[in-house]
Length: 274
Image (cartoon, rainbow, N blue to C red; front, top):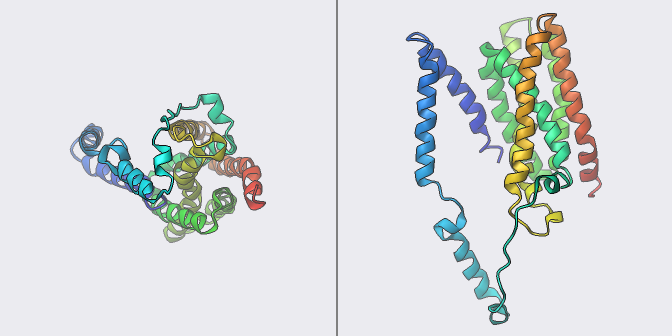
């Protein structure tokens, strides 16, 4: 999942490069060309992406194989198929972990998109760190089987990274690139983990009693809450930066602190096997 989620950072880098290259023609082309590319890829996805495993017969093959290995297969032939119903919004919010991870993603995307919109010169280095951070967070969480603990560790570590970037980032371009790379890795690590593996785990939580039609609702809640943070972060920065950039750095560190706080309970439960 971490490797797959690298497409977000790759898209950010590619989009910035394409837009910058088209500026020499006319600024409007920086919107037109990426828009045409998105429409083209969307059309290709519409034509060729299977709607689900059953569309390519994968699920049927799995059922046939499992049926052959079942000793009591004839006894099950008369069972009626149970249709799963998607859960409601409130019921999805009650799934343990959805609210903490949604709030964590809110603050993570607040910080990430502040870098995206207010540090355009260094965005490629932030996203390069984000690619490594997403892959690293996914690998660690798979090894430890602890999503919350991994996300909390990255979130806590991002606070000193933001502090050191504020203090030492202006020494030279080299140190700026190194520090923002590390910051991007620690900021985007939990972001990548929450939007992929965590959402999938919560969408198939044991409290749902096997109902698999919840994944889209859970993902929408988590990612939608994160998108609100992505919108609010740059907006707040516009007002706060008028006073000082030190205040902006403080805001980013406070946001990471809130993200760490809301994950405390989830990570504690994971550590104690609850």
